[in-house]
Length: 260
Length: 244
Image 1 (cartoon, rainbow over the protein chains, first blue to last red):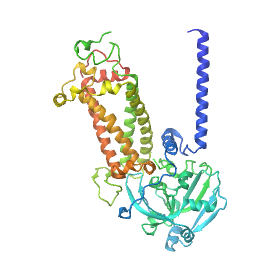
Image 2: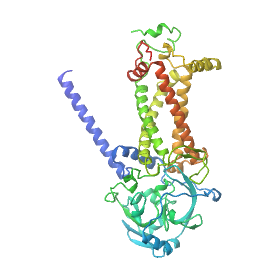
Image 3: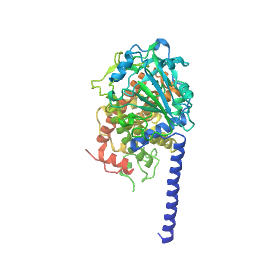
Image 4: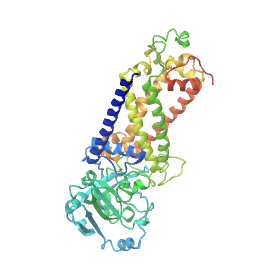
């Protein structure tokens, strides 16, 4: 091989690889801007998470509706994982019918507010008979009643910068795997079937199912439907909350996105 | 260099379109074979880890403890444990498997690999000729040297079923368990009879793939392990047949 050829080859290789690297960098920034990178994108498993999340956000319609079932299809047994919080506060509120409980909404909202259970029940309600599958493999069909999350978000006035809606339960330390909290991206937060549910199968939401209010996200696995809500925080980043991976699930080895 | 096998196979040389140095396995087949092997192990190990969270199967839309099952595996319920890394490894391996598989399938159609090497000849599909091959297998007859050059009809049918039936069924039943995907394409799950049915079919199709893997390795061993593995790595088929 002569000298000039090898130099030319070197320059070409250099140009091609720097074009490749900058192309990747541009792609990563675009993907981030359009909300295609999940907060738990790090590490080798993050590659799989990112491919799944990005391809679903690109290929699936953001407004697709989870299937709804007939009342006769409601499961006779609706199992749960984990027991309600053991804290004294939770049991005092439960005994008092959650009359003193309030749901706070803050963060990137024009009007930070808090609502009592009675106030939430006074908002326009929505009911759905949907399928809920646990990541473990079991599932059940139930009817859920609540106020659409989008209604409460609109009341509070969400900033256009918002990227995530975080959910924090109370009585945290008593959960089986430690503190549990989570978040949704905006397509799932605004989705018409995403509820703040206070009723189940025509009754008050039972304590093991997350009383007084739980999230219902029928387009994702059960672990995304966080129970025992206490606070909702709207943010433009997942950083600075826990390890910055969007929810407590990745800290326990699970994924942030539950649409699979 | 002419290959020694051709001496035994005057009739076959026309079917193996090839010059004497043509390779037994193309580069695409060899590379995708080993990537698939790796991702399949990843899917198998992680699938088992996920299964351990709830080693019980149902039919229909929903099912759980307290409802009737159709199969209870004699395995412990391991909650909150291996299904975490299991799911992470499962979906990473699935991406590798599906991307490689799509590339393999596309190239197999474009290069006529499926038509030339996997479609059985019409004459080979008669019951008599199929029965003969099955009986050879059942008598554990050591494959002759001609098997190093072309797949027998039973092999062809098996590979076609794995590539075009079982693997697509795994992807389909996998998608049918995704609440986000079925919200956009509900028929994916309703045709199968429900989400728990999809999970059950996923499990049984996986069992068939494991059976295929075991038979595949056994046949490679019978045919001469080193020679066949070497052919899948280097592409060449050495004339010397090994006897394990």
